[in-house]
Length: 397
Image (tube, rainbow, N blue to C red; front, side):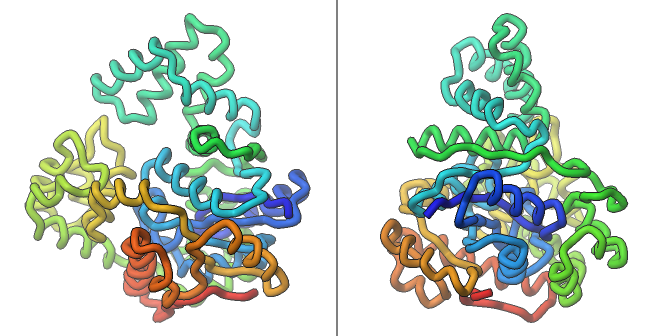
């Protein structure tokens, strides 16, 4: 079996995603396309637009052979840890030849070179990075600026100096670094990002971003969405409800009700962020107001949103340490009916394979906290979206 893996959110799946699925299979010569998809919440610290089983079903219709969940603790992590969790999940599958992704540069070799450089981190570069962080820059910008400065006196780094200015490139480099760190023999495959940029809100282009589709959905512009997504995705969205303020209200209540000491113990809370959040929470009446008050030059809005989720779901620093020590597990969300051979292959390489919630009792004890988190966040999403759908088992499509 020759597997190509795609790490994704499909929030929702767009025509651009469907084209990527087609080209990934064709250009890598894969007989199996594996999608590792975020579940109920995403890397930007936001709730997914729809149920993960519904999104996984659409991914299978669009060309994936099997869709598995990127565990929640990784799915709502910073880019490097997001990539770590995705590669760890992929490592449970034998015969993965490629990881395929969209990127702004469209150059897999350049991404690999950047990954190699950042894995080695020359001392001069590390000093520049440390200085940038000390000056209050957020890590993504601090790293990009350090690499650009380093390239002035090291021409060999010129080709990779600018690619970290773009989010898809940055995530792709993180995949390359994690593959190298894990010692996996997996090649990189990329296609140049189609249509609008990652954060573009323009729905009136050939390949609008998922961000633009979500915004149009919230505005009720379903006629515009129809041209941007596969037909089945429109059917899926028709049973969803645009999110109100439920998630923000839940997060604000939690931040107001816990102590600064408790908040300090949550995952990725460093440098006094807990104090800023507690002070901001005291007089804020909405989560948006709280985030604006707490934001600084060195702390991105996405990071603050993720920390709000860590507080809501009680994800601590120790949880992250335990997750790193634990073996990989595979929660299958959807699969083609005729591809049950993938299950046989997977069972040879991974002891912890789930196709329904009741399988949690058979999983390694070190994993049960994280598996239960995946399902509890799914229940939270259904409350937020008011869809009344709470799937608990794999879909055969």
